[in-house]
Image (spheres, rainbow, N blue to C red):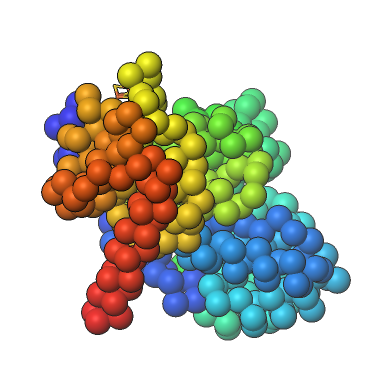
Length: 369
Ligand code: SF4
């Protein structure tokens, strides 16, 4: 099994390269992290604030719903003031899609099944081509075309793939190939199967996600398994972790998935023990304080916070910075070396300062490159 995973991660599926604004997707580019705002689009101020918070958490592309023509003007302002590319999420009304493209969307996401009429679709594709932006064909188990649903009876993986192929053909017949695909189901197993099947049949870049994954614990588990397994198989060019929660949490979880499968390192990684009866300091409180204190740090720093000498020194020595707890104190480790003993009350402050110093050197290194 380990051997299989290593082989699979070493051979990422080669997809076609597209660009959303200046962000490359597919064709060997790093897997891109996306999210979606949940503020009313007509509330420009709040939506831009949320986009900034998402950007600060590492979000690289953001999707914004454009539910009606009254959202076009605010959408245009949002696009012009956002410093990450904005994708317009469109359903039903082709006019909205046309206006969103003209308003400066860096991409649009449509479910062609709910855009009525071939001629409307043709107009959207023509306009997207004029503005040189890609379109995500978003197939969703909850809104498959009627004829496909009738053929399969249920939104099976085969039905999702059939719908995707059907629309790809239509797009290609209209000479449009700046395509990104998603085939989302709320079933993890169906999603995995659908993406496996579609990746055998097309080289368009794939946007991964488990749709309607649920609240934070359930959604994180479902997405981590679904997206994680696909990424380990070399499938997927961009991801969205869908949560019924603050979208900033989506971005944080997305990066943890990418870190766990060895594809990207972003922000600190906390190695902390679950605590047991041997522990003589407040590890949970310490972890919470440190997490809060280093929020927003971008450097991939490994921070170990361990309760006692059983596994503490081993983990702390392997981390960039770490502590192994003792009675009312902790031993500070840095880059494998013991630095000094620190009273429990000072541990959070010392760890946070160490991480912030490492962030400064990391940022200097990034600037130099
Ligand atoms: Fe328990 Fe120590 Fe392991 Fe933490 S590191 S779980 S305190 S044995």
